Image (cartoon, rainbow, N blue to C red; front, side, top):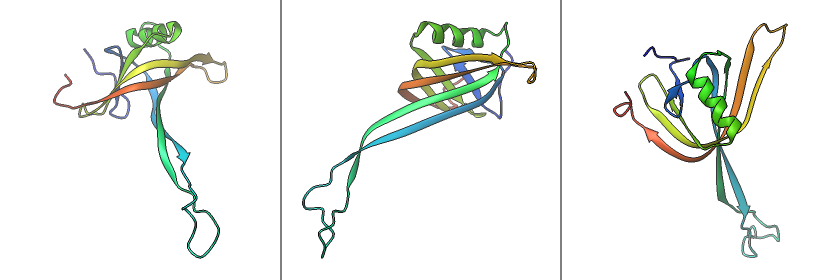
Amino acid sequence: MTEKRFAGTRIEVNGIVVAKITSFTHSLEVEEADVTGLGDVDEGSSVFRQKFIASAIGETAAMEGVVLVDDAGQSELKRVAESGQDAVVKHTDENGNGYELTGFFTTYEEEGSVSEGVYTFSGEFRVNEKSVVSGDESA
């Protein structure tokens, strides 16, 4: 099978390589909780020094690409997005290192215009589980 990569990156959905990916973003967002108490006053004043703890981590992945009608990977991406099914998105670099992300697509969009002259897709993926992929394991 011919490798389909951009910038040394390979994207798979449920084990099928997705062609013509032009952008991939993997993001983390940490929510915080204010745990400031009565004892958290700056010395010599009556002003509270706020203290926070991390309370939740949210993780997403976003991807964009050029639509290819006959690409099995793009078809699988669209199928799981339209059905709301859980999926596995594997994101690896040129050495085969990266992450296997399990979750579901929260958005999927296809668009095109005469001025752009190309039909594109984009999707956002909510990550519920993540595991590390080592180049030694990927083939």
